[in-house]
Length: 444
Image (cartoon, rainbow, N blue to C red; front, top):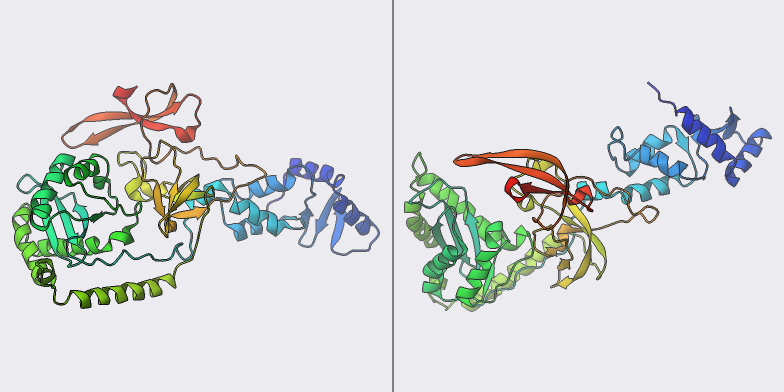
């Protein structure tokens, strides 16, 4: 099966050949029989493989690249495949350079495609802790069946001794309740930590942090936005906790809360956690030296698989989105949501490997990102508006002072024990469709 250029393209090519000096020279050489590489047929200039010469005139070349890249039948392929589609029927000098520039600056590709390369940013280990309970990590295990009116577990780990505290918490806990539990089970026994490390899970945001800060008077040391490597210790403890509970929980899984105390005892008993956490410091200096050596060794090996990348203030970047940042009640499949949002400007560097990014108000996420979650934006200077997405945003913040232009879609949310609710995808007046947002019925 072969495909042929349409007649309107052929007419444009014939006209363009009259305005391209290089094409005129090649046509003259072909008529004089001085070249075997090119020949003229029906007013068109052909080359080897019976490919049409595309003159440099108007937007002919750019439109052909667009046809072989942006269209649904092409499917936004990479540089090599786009060029292969073009070169099967067309030819012009510097076709490779122009295709590479076009594909590299395609905003849809930049937003949707994950880089198949070494992650950006060298490893920056957390500082070595010198004393027990100066620095703790905290995380939540959620979605558990109700046990003693609780449905979540707060996991707090001392980074120095690895002593773990497991706290049962309500499924729908408030900021005040969470802070009270932390004071009761951690501060009461170990004092106020100087730093709290979190991976910025949704449960660690908003009112919870504000209330905890008020109650503790502690300087909170947030880890960078959604950078799970920062809090790997707590993730490992979570896995061991769930493993222990699997061993002893009943068939209906509703007695896990009764097992937490003995689980905590068993976990800490198998480690040196009791010794260090309780103040037996004769081996502290040796432990610190080994921790420092381990951190340096880890950084050495991890950095071999990473790329050094640095941005300047004002550089435009795309921000990688993770499933945790998608609005949970949305009628879309997370696998079909674009992977990057942007472009956004860099506001400044935070520490050695993180950057503060200027985000629009509709995005309800932290402004600081590890460099591995950023990638440089390549702008199409010939057409800056090319590829602007018409897809609805992945996360939005409701704003009711805007005027509704029309409703793009609607869906009904059905959850067990909750009356059905309808949300509408609203196109706001004066804003593009990419700024549309899902709004509840009672807000419109």
